[in-house]
Amino acid sequence: MVENSGSWPVPTAMLDWIAEGPRHLRASESYDICHDAAIFLYHFDELAGSRVLAVGDNDENSAQVLTDNGYRVLGIDLRSHCRGGPISYFRLQGDFVEFVARKVLPEFDCIYSLSAIEHFGLGTYGTFERAPPDPNYDEAALQAMCSLLKSAGTVYLTVPYGQDYVSHSTDWRVYNHQAVRNRLTAGFAIEQEIFFKSAECNCATTHQAGGIAFVAQRDADAYRDELPHLTVFLKLRKL
Image 1: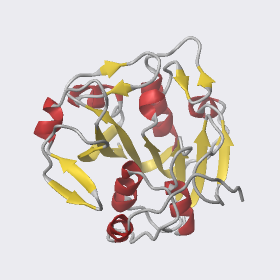
Image 2: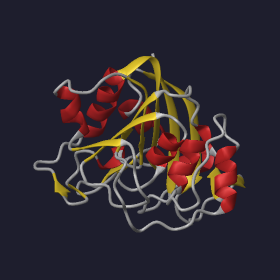
Image 3: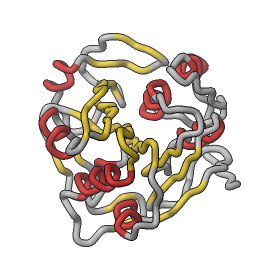
Image 4: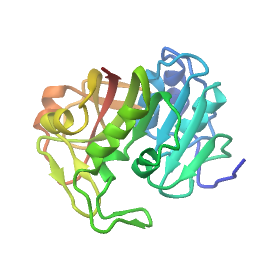
């Protein structure tokens, strides 16, 4: 059990919305749950007790929410866990792709990675420095996930989204429609693709739920800004 500081109350509307999802997950109001994590938890639809891998679990508490709801969770991140309440799931600190290459991980029913894949292999990520950067490490990470999944297993992702594919060599990537398909979905079928605002921006909103503003695909495909204000949530099924 590790105690962490820095959490703040989550709006009740978000917690109620998460609980309306297919698995009716319950989350403590003391947890720090970002929009990415809320959308993932709302759409999470794995059988009770499933084995779940959280890749890049450093900055949000979805792994702890799943653990509280009876799922068997392993977290992997380059950094030590720095935000949220107490954690009671197992964690490994290090490079996810390298862990897979060493064949030290078991099979999983599902794997998820929220706002992390866009950083893989690019310059600095937290206190970690990769030298030299690997521009294709996001693709390597998805192939590593595919290799760990059981037959017909699921991957849940969120990544920044916009009109153009952009790779900021020292920090993150922004994906567009084609880059999502070329870089993130080999070996998978896309089951869900949902667009939402990760920050306030000049893009039309179709509706709101749980305090989150959602965006139509046509508007997300046309959105262009220097900062990644839009995010896409993907649910992928292993072929």
